[in-house]
Every structure is written in structure tokens, then in C-alpha cells.
Amino acid sequence: MRRRLSPQIYLPALFILAALLAFSINLNSYFISDDFAQIGKVLHRDFSVAWGQAHGGFFRPLFILSYIVDSRIWHGRPFGFHLTNILIHSLNSFLVFKFGLRLFQNLNFPAKSIRAAVGAAAVLFLLHPSHTEAVTWISGRADLLATCFCLVSLWCYCAYVDTRRNAHLIAAIAFGAMALLAKESAICLPLFILIVGLYLSRGRRVLVEFGAFGVILIAFVLLRASFLGSLVGGYGTSQHLNFAPGWIRDRLLEAVARSILPPLPAAWSWFLFKPLQSPLFILIALAILGSLAGAIVFRRRRYDASDRTRQNRLLLVLVILFLSAILPVINLRLSLYETLGERFLYLPTVFSCLLIGYISIIMIHNRTVWLILLVCALGLYSWRLYASNRLWREAAQLTRSIKDELAGSSSQKHLTILNAPDNLRGVPVFHNGLPEALQFFQTQKSFESVEINAFQTLQSPSDENVFHQEGERITLQPGNSLDTFDRASSADCLELLSQSADGLQLKSKPCLTTTDIYFFSGGKMRPAFER
Image (cartoon, rainbow, N blue to C red; front, top):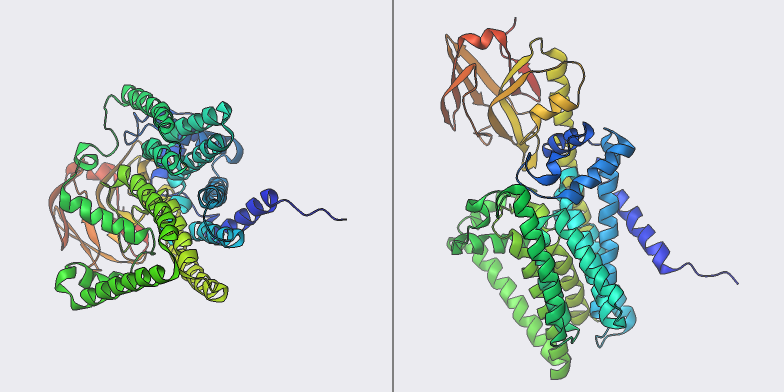
């Protein structure tokens, strides 16, 4: 008799295959933005980025260690770095499935329904269109790793609750420490342990377990501070300690929306900008509230009080887990309309996807209807994920072409760039990393200095800019009114006179003859002066 293949073998393989298909469009995409600074230094045996002192003030040694491993295998080929991201994401999707099964196992539903709901949650997580930044951007790996270690830690903790074996608790604490060393957002893990422990009826014992994780967290904070020389680090106190009620409210609403929905069409901003003044928004809000009221009435008729109490308990646990995961990143920027900042939602969407799967088995008992709705949801997610991945591929094509053009056409060792593409509709291009791209990722020309006067937000790679010189005065005007210049400053050979929506005004200095000057327009880096 032929033995059946174990689900522990074929399920991970299915997740890997699905992830490779979903993100295959960017497997060979080039490096982007921060990739150049971090991976470039690792390739040249400079590991200072691991300790946060040389790039951005982030203490993430395990994250950088993964780059070191990749660089030994793949050297400077981006394919291998992208492959690693995709494999970690597929593993995380499988871990969502395993952790969800443990949380849902004592529910008063058939085992097949529970597996279907958890499987749906895991696949929604795999194809979630808000995961493009974390998976497709190689520098988003910190979120992938932190989430992976958090999920393994929770899985080990659940095994400890079931078996009472101290080895499982030690493993949970060890993986929790690894999550912190991958990214600081894992500071919410002790809260996860407390919430899950209370749900699994650990009673007062959970306080001891919570305390053990708390000790690890305190040790990490002190270790991190000793390397960074600052308790906060990262984006600084103005960002991380901004707890203005209006700011927190807006970030929370955006996080809730983007943990379920893909980036919204930019055309919707007209009625979401001031929602209470928009009849359309009010109509949509009333429709949502009406649907929620109808769902509550429907559930009261279908289930008795004891069933609803059990359901509410897990619903509350998942909501609190989601909010706990949002807490470390609630101060950071997120866009409703672009991919910008969505990597901060990677860990929280573990619980939003499980919540969607759980609500689906509570509200929908007809298997055919359930399958139709799941297929529709996965179809929407897949379509929007593909669209987002295409945008990331365009941005990667832009970084490669700019790097090659500057390296191949410049004749001087000093380079001045009027406007470097900052991002393409929220996807980073050279928000950071242009000097490092020319330093580490090309051998045609050795540059002694690379200066950038301004960074530009692009709506399309082919957006034009108008360059004009009159005497010592230089102007650069965007052809697309939606393109904006940011972080403008003077350089050694060009003095910034003004920055406005109409463009840049600069004044040339005598040293301009010793440097090559370029400006970006129409998808290319163009020499400002013919020599």
C-alpha cells in the first residue's frame, strides 16, 4: 500500500511554490535604495551596518547576518537575495497556518472547517498586496525575519503549554531574542506571550513566563543602547515618540484599512481627505455600520449565548494581538494610496488574516458560498499584488539604468546631480544609496565624491524635467505637476537659491568646471552641459 505524503512535507512545499509564482516577476529585479548601502558594505566586508552606527541608527545584527550569508553564496547577484526573501515569506505563511491551528483547535466547529479557515488565512497572508514592500524590497527582510522568529517563538510557547517541557519554553525565549536582533518591532512579543497565555488558561503562571520574556527585552534594550549610544535611535524621538492623538488616530485607521485592503486608488483621496465633509464617505460608512449591525443580529440568531461567549473570547484575543503588533510602529508613516511604509504592517497582518479567516467560519456555513467569497478575495489580492510588483520592477529598472548611465558617461571623478529620483509613486528608487551604488556596484569609474542637490518624487519613470541656464542661474522645472522636489540643499559647486512647486533655482560656482553635472529627465540621467 502506498503511504500518504505527510502534510508537514507537502504543505511547506505548496507555500514555497505559491510564493515563487506570486513574486516571480521580481526575482531578477535589481537592488533599490537602502539595498546599495547595506549590501554594498557587506560585499566589501564592512559589517558596521549590523550595529546601527553607520546607517540609520538601527541595531539589527541578525538581519545583516542574513546578508552576509547571501553574499557568500550569491555575491552581488540580486536573484539570490530576492529568493531568500521569498522563501522566508513562504515559511511565514506556513507558520501562520500552524499557529492558527493551535489557536483555533478548541473551537466548537468541525475540524475541517477550522483547517479551511486557517488555511484561508495563511493564503491571504501569502498573497496580501500590502506585503510587497516587505517581500520584494530586499531591505524589507528585517520585517520578514522578525515575524518569522516571533511566530516560531509563539509556536514553541504553545508547545510548552501543551507538553510542560521546559525545552519548549527555552526555545520560545531563544527565538524571541532572535526576533529582537532581527528588528526592534519584535518588542511586542512579550505582550503576545501574555495574551496567548491568558487565552490558553495559564492563569498566574503566565506572569512568570511574561516576566522571562520581559527580562530578554530589557537586556536587548540595554544592549542596543550601548551600541547606538541612544535609547531611541531609529528615526529619532520626533518620530518614535510622537503620540499626538490626531496623529495616532490617523495612523491606526490607515493601519486597519491597509491590513485588509490593497493600496487604494489615488482618485479616492478627494473624499477621504476630509471624510466628514464627503457625502460619499458618509454613505460608505453607513453601509459598513449597517453590515456590522446585520452581522451581529445574524450571529445572535444562529448561536446561543455560550457559543457567542467562546467566539468573542478568540475574537478579542486576535484584535488585541493585532493592536499589540501595531503598537511599536504606530508612529511611523503609512500611505493609504501607495506601497510606502506597508512593511510595518507585515507582522500585524498575521492576526488580521487570522481574524478574517475566523469571522468567515462564524458567519458563513454554506461551503459553496464560502469558497466563492474566498476565490474572489484571493483574486483581488493576486491582481493588486501583481500590479504592485510591476511598479517595484519599474523602480528597480530605473536604479540599474541610472547607475549604468552615470558610470558609463561621466568623465570626472566628482559628480553633481541636480535631481535624483527619490521614489516612484511610493516605491523607493534612490531615497538612499546612490553614492553607494556608484561606489560598490560598478567598476567602470571611481568617483571621489557624489553630491545630490535634490530628490524628486516621480509619478512615472518617463516624467520630463525642463533644464534652463541663464548666466550663473540654473532652473529645473518638473514637467508633471504631481512631481515634487524634496530634501533640496546646496552642493560644493551649486548653491540652492529656492525650492518651490515650480522647481529648483540654483547658482553655479567656479568649481563647476571640475565636476560632471547631471539631471534626471525622461527616464535618463542627462548631462547638463556638453563639454
